[in-house]
Length: 534
Ligand SMILES: [Zn+2]
Image 1: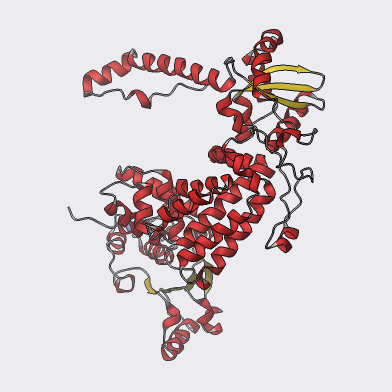
Image 2: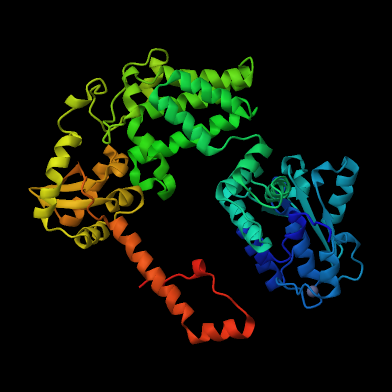
């Protein structure tokens, strides 16, 4: 069987299969169903957003033997001929003669005048479907005789959705990052996206994996870009150069790497300043958010964006990229070299006056943080902050306090629910256990592996939410759990395992399932069994 390009194979055959452009579909459907059909329609928009596809479906709608209808049958000779890709304007037997003129702005002056004449006095049963990427080049007299439909560029989410749909239907394995990168490279055009998808599948030998997509596009994986940020945060110049060397050996698109860096910094900043707005899958950035101050993130972002802008001016892109990162390194406060052992609760400190672009620090938005430079003396940090007690002290007190507290995991889980803690702050809460609530203080314990979650902005948010749920102002104090108190997250995992086993067992022993297995030789795939949420 010959391979058919995905864009062709999955070209929508009816309006309901189209991705995006809902505003256009609604208008066309309404026109078709009410029988008020204008004789000239103009579709504008960049390439690959569905102009000719919509025109084709519209031609089918007009000429379908069961129509005109907004839902052409797809089976009559008119429908099949158009679907088969015969030229719309060669359709002789049709009810309407439909002329599709693609890239209509390329017409010569004479042709334009001829078209204008026809549009002024259109013969009955002739419809013009005009498409252009450049409506500015059309005569106003032509524009004024057409109904205009402006097609939008597709969002990455729409392209991702369609790619997932196609890959699922084609039974092709994929990972999320691979699709995401392709969707971004498609730049708003579904057709370009599907061509890239074809290429990537061929490149990956029938599957779609992020590392192969990156290799194909010459882009760099997000995980590698995050490593750059981690190294920058640790202030290790030698390691930074090594990593740049490693990335440089792939001869990547350095502009894309800088874009990716800027995107990551944006997500880090959201976690720091507006935790509620950050995405649930940002957990891998919580560590960074805790180690780098909010103002540093602002400075770094500026440097990345400026570095990206100046890339064409650099002797080589590689040098421009390296300089951008070295500039970022120059702004890492010297003492954060100790960040190899990050303090779990960072103080969003104001950076020491930057040496080079001190002017730009004036543009840095105010950050709700003490205006003291606390990095040099972490142990004597501002008292109003919430530093963790030193680990040795915690390990001595934690068990007794827990024994005395009498708070069960269920009570804590209930409070989390009441306080509507979701996203990263919910993750922090569920990884913690409740030691005690007294004198306006909620005392929580975190296992060392989760201490990085307790960043200052999250704790502030936690205080607000818990305070609202408890109906009074409270402070949150985090201690280290060295004895292993069960947290809501762990309780959940344990309960899920029990429920999963019960669900699998009930499916296995179900008489109907048994009969399907016996009759059709079916088999139960255990991972596909999901307990019903109670
Ligand atoms: Zn039909």
